[in-house]
Image (cartoon, rainbow, N blue to C red; front, side):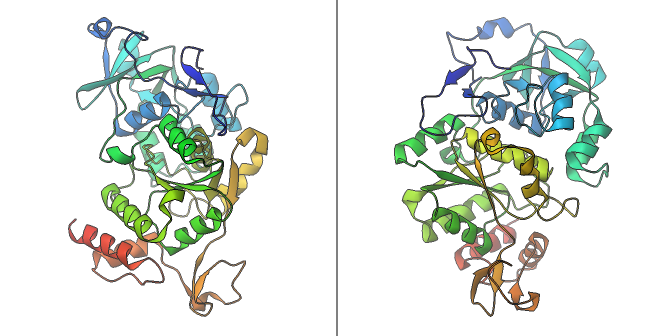
Length: 391
């Protein structure tokens, strides 16, 4: 857990970060170690997901975690949806390595990616990964066809734990929209928003999403559109295409003073209900007061029930979560109502409804077919068409 030198007390009027303070483990000259001390230290190459976890830990997105979790927290997260001290947390943020690396590494280790040093890990523990247990409890399946389970099985068998330091925040492919939790909080405060709803997406926004956003904006001051741009499945829409679609939609159909587009650099785990909890708690760390959870949040295939990601929040009190969960049913366009509706507001059966799955949308785009305007705005459809045509 973080020490007083690792965190900055919050004086903000925004919700306090989980644990009360925002973890900040980005290297600062004069405060942290001298880089010259690292010249003889062992190195460890990070995967894309581990690099994303390093950033999320070091910038405070995963507060109160200040590093990769130790065994007590690991088992408690898996079995209780909580850290060992009782704090809500639902995904084990681990650094798995092979047995040879586990044996050769100790003390302060230099973390690298693509051959470049990106940070450090101060190893405090090494312990065996319980892959079968983790698969059953976190992903609710041991099926290797599940992308999260497949990634888990492919990892090393030993988890390294300890606090991390990130050398520099990697602004990636979208530097103008790549903000740390502290930076997002600064923007929210500068705009005077006292309530902010965050929306997580890894897909292009269509009319059903837009409907959820605008219903929520009737309740709060601002919308944090927070698309995940870390590692996703190979058949997901590429991040650069999605970002252009978001910017196009916001530019035409949303009030600029009430929206903020900022990327969420985490990698997808496709853990459904478990991932929904972390998505909500981390948005609290970014300063959001509300979080939208729709149907099959962070799901994949048929591994989770339609509304399991909403129901899992009943495991916590409102005070523990510290962020209000807005639960929406499946929304769609009704040809008879002539508008976006949900089962709560539409009297017509499915024969009147226009519903396209993400898979069907990708199929139509690959085939060069037009997306209906009732499903997505024409300007967004054109961005997607060009993106797939050029792929």
